[in-house]
Amino acid sequence: MQIAYLSDIGTRKKENQDFVGIFTNKSQYKLAIVADGVTSEKGGDIAAEMVVNNFGFGWRQTDISSIEEAKTWISKKAREENSRILMAGKRFDDLSQMATTMVLTVAINNDVLIGNLGDSRAYIFDGKILKQLSFDHSFGNELIQNGQISKENVNNVPHHQSITRYFGLNAQTEMSFAVDKVKNNDIIMLATDGLTKQVKESDILHVIKSKHKSLSEMVARLINMANEQSGFDNVTVLLMSQFLEDN
Image (tube, rainbow, N blue to C red; front, side):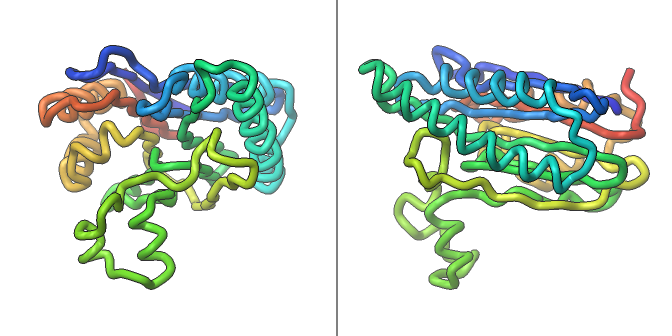
């Protein structure tokens, strides 16, 4: 398993509220996780770090070896972490609105599990196309899912990018999951919206198609592209592949 990641403050923010981590459990399966603190609220950086580190610490204690087990554990852990963030917000006035999005992946043999809360994304590249596996929890995307508006017209909806689910919102927050097959030199990408709202998917695809580059070089190029566009947000990118060699 080859993994490369970078997190960058961007060109306009005063602090980086993204957080990223890779963790290995007792069965030697890895959990990769990226969180993006809700930057309009105080404590977003703390919430992001809490979620990543607590998920990681818990994962290291498990001997999970199947996608089904992983999904069950992640669902339970997400509820625990959401409760922990809500409780911290009640205890400390300066953290009363702390919140974060999250996207994660677990690869077990040829299966990959994706889980997300918010608008941080996961993609799979199969050598030809870049397919989004996560579900954006945004106002506009949920209108599309419910058949209330077309994808072509969603940009005309006020606040269509407002996120509707994240850690710290309420006690009922639930993650979305997807399962897919991983084969050959497939690449999994996790990224915060600092990348996906600034760089077109076609441009991301062009970089990831550059098989002569290492994963580290691809990550660095994607970060630079986001900052060249405007750098309005923190940006975090993680790439992983079971077979592709990194330099």
